[in-house]
Length: 115
Length: 110
Image 1: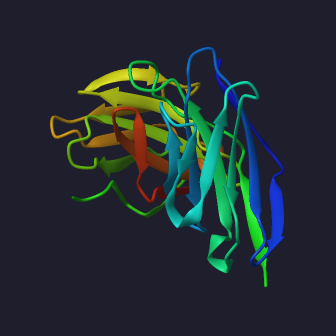
Image 2: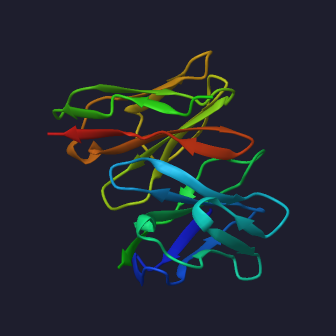
């Protein structure tokens, strides 16, 4: 069965500092990997996705993530945090097109950005 | 192109009642998935519909049921509501394995 572990339920950074949110997954098949962001009282917005091809993927709002198969990781980074980045971030895995498309989510990491 | 829309946005029910939540898919998307997100948790997969047929189900009891219509819109029905059903219910439509979410319906069961 697939699973996702997000290390750190809360991460706090200063404005302008590096953001690093960690995600490790387990999957018995080549995974599709996703990061979603959720602002208070809202649904999930897709930040970026890895399906196949280039292992470094760029998303919206300056975020990027790197798929590392050997480490079963898909960490999310942003070079310089902005106050508007404060939200909850979810990493998710699926078997992708042709497999079970259900998403298995991590428990989420709440990002706080301090002025 | 419109995104995924869900209705209603908020709902209050009492224990034992039944509820129907609705979802309109993003244009061209033939797959709809439903998730339950309890407070402080990640979303949990309820079930998925592909071309009007159930295409996978999570660990939810039979009182959670669904439908997908020919236009790919969908309903989630929950019978005999329990207090623990209070959550944000998210619908996502997908094409080629990437899911796009609506804003959700927040259900409160009193």
